[in-house]
Length: 328
Ligand SMILES: [Zn+2]
Image (tube, rainbow, N blue to C red; front, side, top):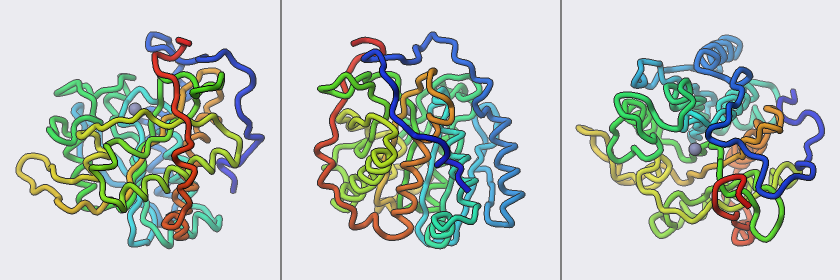
C-alpha cells in the first residue's frame, strides 16, 4: 500500500524568489480540505475498518462544543504524540495526520513495526473551532492562540489535551504547522518550503537527552525529505516560547487550575514542522511534505535507530530570510 509514496516526487519547478504564497486576505478554496465533519467521519471509518487496532476517543469539548477527537493505535510501551492543526487556518496538516493514521492500520512492514513498538496518539484537529472559522486562534470563550496556552490553560482545548498528555505520557511528540513568512532559504533564491523546529524553547531549558532527541528527530525528518527531493528546507528561527504546548511537554511544571503539575516530564523529544501552503502545489504534494518526514521519525523511533541517529548535519541546516511571504 503506497499512500504517500505515489508518483514522482520532485522539488518545485522554477519560481519567483519569495513566492508564491498565500496571503492572509487571499481567498483559498477550502472545499477539498478536511473540515471538522470530515474528521469525524474519517476517524469513524478508520476505526471501523481497523479490526480493533484503532480506538477513537474524545478528550473533551471545544469552546463551541465540538468533540476533541484523537485516535490511538499500536501496542508499544512508548507513546508517540502526533498533533495537527492547533492553528485552525493551517489546512493540510489534518489530512496528513489522518493519512498517517490510516497507513498505520495497513499491512506494510513499517506500519507493523510501528504498531508493535509504539502506541501512536493522533490528534488530527486540535482546534476544530478555529479550523471551522479558518483562523489561527480558538473562537470562544477566548480568541487566543492555543499554542500559547499551556501556562494559563484559558481554553477548554488546552485543558483537555493536557489531560490526555498527562495520562498517555508520550515519550515523543510531533506538531504539524504551516508557515506564511520566511520566504527564502538564506543565501539562495530557493523558496523555503519546509521549516524544521527542533527548539521551541532554548536548549538550555531542556535536558541533554531532550535536546539530543530533538535534533535526532529533526535530522531524520530533514534526511527523509532530502532523500525524496521533496523540499527546500530551512531551520526555524531561534525562539524561546515557554507557553507553547511542545515547550511545556518538554519542561513540565504547569497544569490547569486544581491539578498537580508534572515535575519530571515523560516527553524526551518534541519538535514541529512548518510546511508552506502554496496554492499552486497540489494538496497531495503538501500532505507528503508532512507525511514523509513523520513516517520517517515514527519508523526510526520504532526500530530504535532514532536513539543513535547522526546529528552532525544539524548545525548546517540553513535559516530562512525573514519578513512576510512575498517580500523579497
Ligand atoms: Zn501554526
